[in-house]
Structure formats: C-alpha cells, structure tokens
Image 1: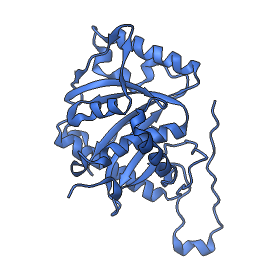
Image 2: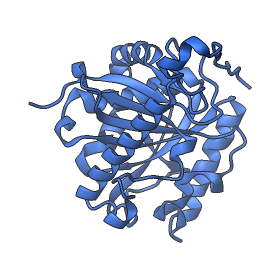
Image 3: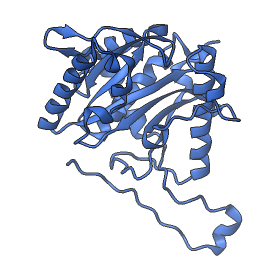
Length: 277
C-alpha cells in the first residue's frame, strides 16, 4: 500500500553554527539521533539515485551513503514514517546576503557553463541577486528532493516540497534558485507550486540535459511570497507542522547517558535567535 502523508512526521536537521528560529518549539539535543538521520537520508538518496542511473556505485561510500559537500552546510527537512524510517527529504542551502553568482551551486550547472547560454544564465541570476539585496532577502538553493519509490504519486511527495517552502519562510524572506528534474514530474510540480523559469530580458532559459545527473532538468527561481495561492491552506498546515517538528542542531551537546545523569551537572543549552540583518 503506498505511503501517505498522514503517516509522516517532519524532522529538521540544522547545519553547524545555524541559529534556530525563535518560533521553533522543539529543539533536540541528541547528536547521535541527528547523525543517524543524516546517514539514513544519505543512504535513501544514494539508493534512489543509483537506481535511476543518476550516479555511479563508486560515488557511494561503504555504507551506501551518497555524501555531498553541501550536506553539512544545509538545512535538511526529513519526512518520517511512523516506524522512524525516512520517507523523503529536501535540502535548503542558505547563502550570505552578499553571495556572488560564482559561489552558487547553480553556477556549476552545464547550461551555466555552455557558451550559447552561460551569459544569459549569469545575467538572469545576477539580476535576481541585485533585486534580493535591495529588498533585504536571503538567497537559498533548495535541492535533494527525494522520495522513496512507494511515496511517489502521493500527497506525501508534494508535502515535502511545501514543507521546505514553509521552513524557508520561517527562516526569513528568501528567494532562491534550483535545478529541477523533469523526470517523475518534479519540475512541473514545482512550477505549479510557484517556481518560475529563469528569464533575462525576453529570453527564457530553456530546459537542458544535465550530464552529471543523466537527465533533463530546468532552472527555476522562486521567492517565499510566490507560492501559488491554491496551496495556501497546505502551506499554513505545513508551517504549523514544521514549527512543531523536532530540530536537531549540529552543534548541540551530546546526550548524557542515563547511568551518568545522577552524577553529572546539568548541561544547559539555549538556541540562539537570529535577527534579520
């Protein structure tokens, strides 16, 4: 029987040094559980990507994890089943306000490096970055939207994307860029949610084949005020869910073993609250 959204719970993994939004109500200190969740997420991503020929087996480590350099720098939204297994995930890489085009992951895409379109991609992105700075918005790059095979075609798959959008809103006013695969309708779903193809002047950046992934993709842009109004109720529900989801900071104190708690002074830890720049 296909997995459904009702079976899932959201969990959030914070990157090192991140300041947890003050509205978040459930911060966990358990670094062991955070490490387990991150590893399981990387194994899910590796398993799905390998089956779809998006990566080679040599790109997995000995435990089957697909580890990416941006993993430790990113927020991760995980969808868990009732048994604690990960049903799907999404990633949000948050950049400094002064980020430049060449520092973005989108700058490494093949369309951003091919001579016919590279200058148009750069122009489109730099125009968006300028607009964002003028409006005090943060630049983010979502990615890693992966669901298990039994979760495809269900509300659970879409809820992960909406949940990531909701968390981006909670982090602050954001705009972002993403590379969305055409496979399984991912790019069309994201466009229905509010994503738009990159444009510069009267030119729209076309979809293209990405050799690194072995599939067709589209470059999309969005901001936290651009969600399709049709999904307003779903977004409100997702915001409530992620606000009450467990958040695992990367630098939280280690959990004290039960046998040592009576003999160890209490460790107090308070999440820092980030104010808008």
